[in-house]
Length: 493
Image (cartoon, rainbow, N blue to C red; front, side, top):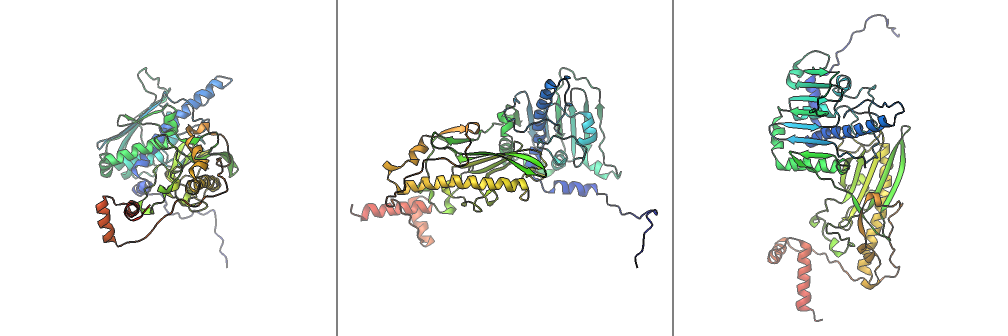
């Protein structure tokens, strides 16, 4: 027998509000220190681009108006593809020491009304007028980073018409039992008129660092990793003139380049990918890079080493950018098609470089909330990966044929090797469109093999004794030199 409830009677309720300390613990559990700092730099980079976009929109508006001056927390109008926008007027200064952390920028500041209503919310409200092409999307990056760094911080910001200071003692805030979660401004002026000495930007200070953070900021290895991450993940902004420094030292931009000639050209494709009724633009480049000395050499027998002896070129692999923020760097795993759709990574592919740029609403892009990994279930990533596999197989085909030519074709008859020698290293902007890797195909006839690979096992003690005598630990080198010794002393030629 069913019992009908009287919906007019008050219902009993269960308290489901989160405990602050548990919330803080869970918020920072899955992010490391370096990505936390990178998140804060993301905000400053977004802010600089958004300020440029707002100025451009205002200059082009018929009534002389334009979108409201905005900050790192987002605005409409930023075209993430505009990697050549001049950012040379902007700077971001990061200070990370065992005593304190600080990040300062001159990127226009956070308007007071945005700070009051949105910037310090945990999660992005549905009515937030964010920029679809900014990096920040989930509304947790700044707060999570600050909680990760320490237990006392201050955020201060000045815009063209407002200013505020917001100090937070996390321990005191966590003890506050008020069910309304809020922070209290120490200063707030909605009608501020900046002085000539004011910097329109944001300053974040953390002066009570966690013990582990103090240790990490005192370690050269951690600071080195932070520097490398910032240079890699913000290479587009750095190349556009944005000055980012870490402890006073300027970061250097790196410019992706590929080998190109009249007869050798990388893969370069563009495509619109669709998900949830929206579109994401993909631009893909895949080819080979010239060596650091400017040479581009065909794969040869030196690639035939034992896997345990080969240290992969640290730059080889796929690079995936989402709205100009680097998500994957030098990836040679099955995630990007290696060994799952294309050949697994091997020494002969050490010159491979692939670059994929995705531009669109950040909610559609295939990153996790920390922007340190790929969402494999993303429809956009699945479509992108299919294109990556196709391009990877095309470049691998080129490298395989270059290697086979070197092993099977007399030097006088080779055509790939001299074509490779004639290539020059060019920025991606100079790479023409091509669905496949273009290169001269070697003749079908084959000479007898000129190279043979020898592999055999010996007792470890015997190997160690010979290796010590030859002053090398590489098995391939031991094999070559012992073979050469036998050839020189025992073979009559």
